[in-house]
Length: 322
Ligand code: ADP
Ligand code: MG
Image 1 (cartoon, helix red, strand yellow):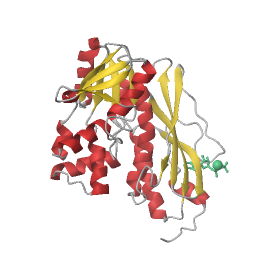
Image 2 (cartoon, protein in one colour):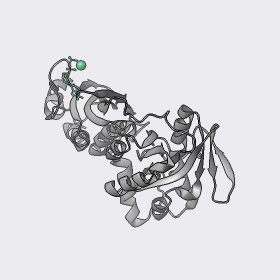
Image 3 (tube, helix red, strand yellow):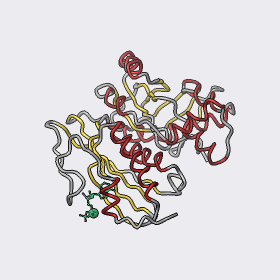
Image 4 (cartoon, helix red, strand yellow):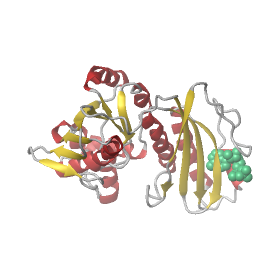
């Protein structure tokens, strides 16, 4: 691969400098200047992606750029916050400029789709490593945290968790997928859609929320631990149809559904009195929202399996997708 011999300065100028909508001073100075809107609280998160650990080094650069932004924006969705400013610290090996250009396009496209200005960062030579930081805003006190669930609350999940995990197994192990579903699974893996609009719609409705990055049941245990609750999830209530349509092997579909990561759906709790509002949000956003269980007092997550047996779910999730 040809080294670009481009200076970092030139890379930043050509590829990392983008129009901004609500940033007072963006790329080009020592630091960025932003003005939070009155009455808003800042919401800040950073999530690093390391080649070989979080993605294959040969992932298409546009997909990688999108995903690096998306996993960070998903943390804003999970708080019920609006993404506003994105920063990107990255180390890059000597890759060709076409790679950097495509990566930057994917990253910028995801920021633009969800309303975040790409306002700065840092660029060095080194092993491929991406470290975005996202800053969002939420009306003071309105963020949806992990610790607000109450006994008796319903547990819900958005979308079709498991498709990204099936896409990953397809790429890694050659898992066969149904014809029409293959594209959907790979898209879920490479171009995850953070549920920002859903997070915003759930302010004042959900009592606790988080995004599903490591697997539905394992991530749900974080809400239960922070809220000091137990829960019962019904296996038959899970959104099975999409994973079964993609992969008819029920054991594989089930592992993807309960323990597959990378879809960046939202899992949340809400009082039963909110069921109608949540169904209305689902219709309005054209996004399935599925009620999968209920919070109880006590501790620990149990799965009511198809055969009527109760199975405890460990902290690491029901069944590691390995
Ligand atoms: P300094 O010498 O002050 O550290 P840099 O040369 O690191 O400045 O960065 C110069 C400008 O370019 C800064 O405004 C910085 O935010 C921006 N920048 C550097 N890398 C990136 C990047 N990966 N994405 C966006 N902006 C970047
Ligand atoms: Mg710097």
